Length: 269
Image (spheres, rainbow, N blue to C red):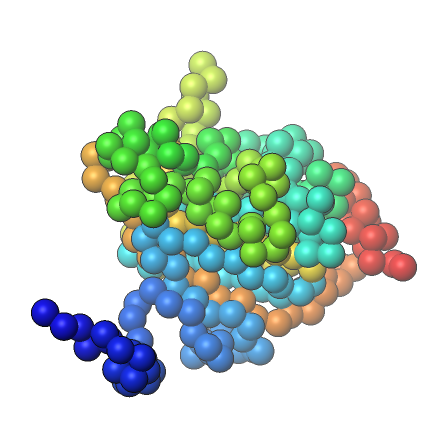
């Protein structure tokens, strides 16, 4: 059987016919979002098992939406100007005297600066302990964990994403998993809470630096379901103002204020 694209002219015609086709999981170019009042910078739906990345300017807002209640948004963050500075999950928790992330919390770098702040959180189920799934963990659960197989893992998706910025395996640091939660029991054990949940839950973040953000949308590493269960993730970013001096999140705690002062000092050059 011959293909409709078995020669260069047929392939060209087929490609042109496909122009304007829309599917659920895809980037919107140029970016637009009917429910955002502002200059939209990025609008994309990441497929189940997919990944994406973006450079965002200081002050940008980034909204994550768990469209169907079963997304797992594993995120890495880098200083766009100097990617050797990146998210430090351990410092993010211990500096804020917390084990859990939510509205008003900060995401801190390994240099004591605020990278992002959490403006809104409708979910309340997130994980800053377990990290990303990998080929071995997926193989144990699903029988396969290859990057280009039907059960792709978050760590290998991260490898593809960071390579677009000249980064490699050594640059993949511990991630935050949005929308999939864990709780720490009194005996210190980790109790996963991986859903599925109500569709449409969202988180809104504010970029406090110029950033590279990386996302992988693969099942949580502690998700015990036999099926590869994950649903599309919506990402929307829009331009916003830099955090003012009287911002309540900035001034909520002495530790947080110090981190903001470190960030502001970095830009005072």
